[in-house]
Image (cartoon, rainbow, N blue to C red; front, side):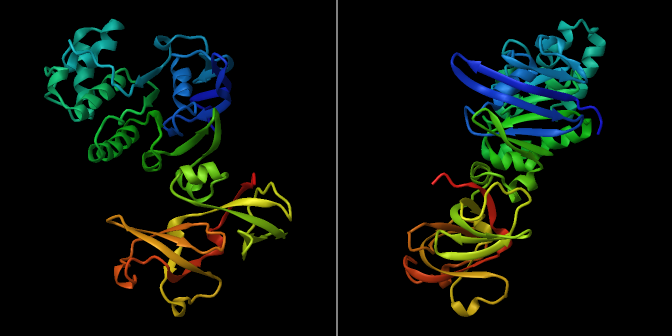
Length: 371
């Protein structure tokens, strides 16, 4: 494994008596797109500011390209930042905004002009050089901020929710453009967002933050398919979180009593911090539940079929969300299907008997239950 471009060692940070970061350690490779994902107040932006030099950690060290930069100011780090509010200068035109950092460094005007044209071409703003900031759209302002960060050719680019002010359609288009730019330049990007879909779309790896710690770090598919906690399962996509008693464990299998009613045999996770007789949390993704409207439809062996009452079906355009009650406790499950179900519903659907088809291998055992 090559020397990481960035290394954080046990970074801690408090504001007053409130701890924000609790011993964060992290490595980022050159050319990697890493997303820091989590709810507001979880520590992801503070981590970004520590990397950029805008905050000093209370404890821990920051290394960039093998050299410690913990005590260096932002302008002495080979790192540029794109802020959520873009931080553009309204009295300067587009080209002057992009060239600002180069001018401060004393780059000759001719060389700076070439760099500015290249950066604007990269973000598809050629011909906008003389426009005032007030004369361009929010999406174009975002591109100017990105060009200003890229023009200095840093080894690491930090992006603090840069698409947050854009409408949904433009935001999705910019997600793909940002990823394409990152791949073309081969730069390392560290991207902060609370948008799970954005993280899954853009990232090579995702660090899921929760209360100042990294709850899970891995590739998007690994985190979605194999969450290690109920927080990660529920934050990355939707998940049905249920309690289950571990009635028996073998080297390869775990036997669960789901909600004290339904026995399931599921693959044993590689890491399982629970013993027989204990109650654990398990997760089941809504799209992994198939809703059958007749018992005769229950077919393949090796699948579990649970009788349930259908409580509500909500049409979402590209999919239908179905709320179900399979347990005597009244616990609700949510299923999502791409198939049209209107013809199979009786009236308003509430109380209709259905069957749920579940693959035991789709059940994910998480942590011990707090209950």
